[in-house]
Amino acid sequence: MAAEAHGNNDLQAHEATYSGFLSLFRVGTAAALFTAAIVILLIAH
Image (cartoon, rainbow, N blue to C red; front, side, top):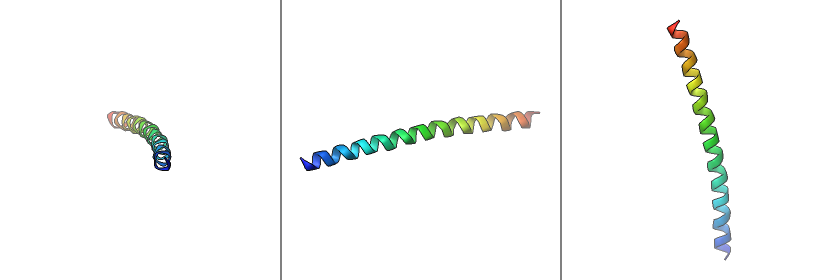
């Protein structure tokens, strides 16, 4: 039983870490797209 509880805790920690990673990835992607759009607009003018 101890192994199951330990595995469940690892899964919860994994899900929390992965959720944080996805949030950071989304914000980073949006920031990169925004920066690229600004650069393209500056080059075009």
